[in-house]
Image 1 (cartoon, helix red, strand yellow):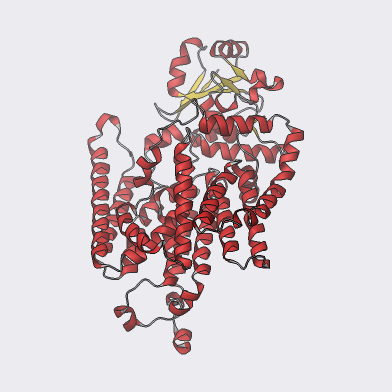
Image 2 (cartoon, one colour; image 1 turned 120 degrees about the vertical axis):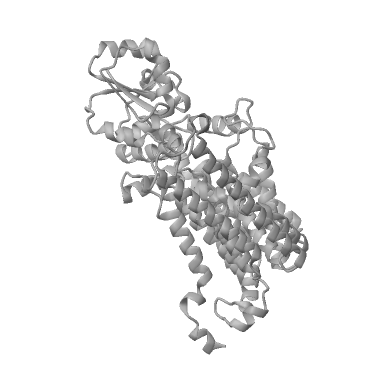
Length: 587
């Protein structure tokens, strides 16, 4: 056996780990700088860190030079560090998101690998490979589960989509995952042992960092998940015994900045708690208000390409979640981790697709256990094959619609003016359809899962380059603003609207922009006397522009400029990036 191990080629010995690394690098890292930043979110998480670096103020977040208290500070710190290391560019702004996804994937891998370590020692085919035995023994072995869970997580559509976008939800999901994983490790340790204490401290550190990223949700999700898990396991004494140390650690981690921001800005916690938690999540006028069933409706889309094989996984989970061993405990933990936070997010008034990102690690874990068990039965293998074929048919319909819209140009919605983008999209969809079909035909169980997950790989790598022209026109004003910035005088007075304020600040490297009309998320900053004059109604802005000829520039969406033109003096120069995009008028 040892002789066989030593002779095993490197690519076979580590083939599954190499596949994960290749997938992550090619789909998540390499294309990061290929597309311009998308408004409003990506430019927000570029500009606030830029202003931190420029001002040297790393305590109180500012946007356009005004107080911006919608989030704690850690997410801005992480993006600011990336910008300091790699420069003010698209790659640096987005890099924290895929890195946090990668770290979440590592946590998922080691959660299962460590838990099933003894089983893996008996079946570790990463270190033992026999071609004849592989042909006759097709069961998915315990050591495959850690790979499969990580793989399933990385290729979920939402994980990929959010993981390539500059938002804070990936960072929050990482810390929540770490909180739950380390607490679970502590629960598996000998009570009172050194390892239990260390894991509980790690869990508390992660929870504190989650709090510094997005606030009190950092406590809600772990308490719901872990409390329900301990109750399910009938470990009632541990509800108190194991809780005090991570809670204390979380408080210690979050306290220094919390105290500093309180003394610097006494109203921070009042605004952050009531506006960002109570009003946004529970209030009748909450932002992004949706029905309770919103996440249930979108779930089939965000878990692709696994949507049509979830019944197979469900059948496997039903057979295993009552087990008394470590596999049963992991499945019960993942069920608590998936279901209760999902219901919590569904009960909140305000909903965004990114809010349910913390539910994807347990989803991947359940899918890995469920598929490995479900595929042992012939009838469920046939169900998997049908699911793969249904997915191929769905992608075929998407391909048909994709080509038809380009050819027919219905309602003037032709996606691309450059044929190579269309061809790249077609190739990616065709490759996915082929791999879905091969997955259905494959006889080896683990190969069926891998081929199904790899089907969108080319699409993941291509999507950065094939954004529709209209999307770039309406949501990516960066190239236009960068070109305009080259000839901009430092003392030029800039006016813009709320939707573009973050992009204008980022690309023009300014924090003194005037807002015309409604103030949006900068409304709170404008309540302070020193910044109150930074917002103007259209009539006042037009009068100001008339009194300062040759010194003012207005940047807004073309739709807004058309509405405002009758109130404004005639501009001496007009530029734009398209009829439905952004325009710049110089007066």
